[in-house]
Amino acid sequence: MSTSPRQNLTHQLTHDLGIAIVKGVYPVGEGLPSEADLCIEYDVSRSSTREAVKMLSAKGLISSRPKQGIRVLPESNWNMFDTDVLKWILSSKPSLSLLKEFTQVRVALEPQAAALAAMNASDEQIASIAKALERMVEAEQGLDDPLEADIAFHTSILIASGNRFFVQLTEFISTALRVSIRYTNKIKGVPGADVQKHAEIYEAIKARNPQQTRAAVSMILEEALELIESKL
Image (cartoon, rainbow, N blue to C red; front, side, top):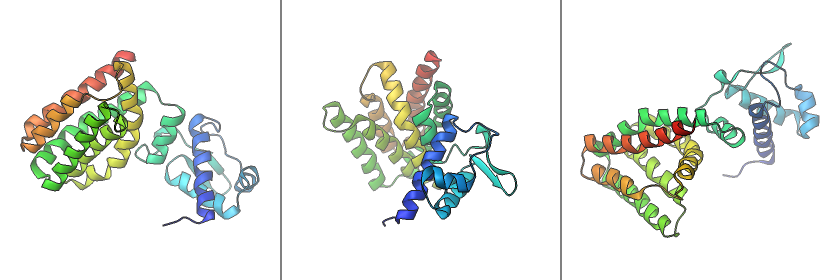
């Protein structure tokens, strides 16, 4: 489905303003230029500007009220589960403390999701996890992208959990994994993940052993958390 030129302009303006807010170009509590001024500054129509303001309001970055104008809201209001917001933060000011908090979320969620996958995954879903693991092996030989293969492995487990909430978190998890995996691999001085440890997770899921699966996932996540904490 193709987007119209107006939708493209709206998305571009939303992106540009989102990045500017996250970078602190427009400080918290301060006003943004009026819709009329934004039209001139970014050379877009009034309707595109209005849509962009609505989108940023929905993401919790700004409030727009009559007579008060457009105000930047504190970071505590921002929707961190919104993948656009997360991308803007990670691309413009990724901090170790943010990566630590994200990894803590993974520690809370992923071992349980993996245990559910061991109990609920269909043969087809187990084959998807195996395929992602195969990609990780190929990435070690330079035949695939190590980061993409690693992300595919973790997201295929979330999908295999059969829990609709975990499934909906796949985009959020993969967005933040792009930054955190790259970072932890850099600390370890390796280009890709530990394939053997990921193979143990896969084998435990395939064997339908939820306890073993949970323990194997917890181990690699605790290790990632320790790595990040060691640099804080």
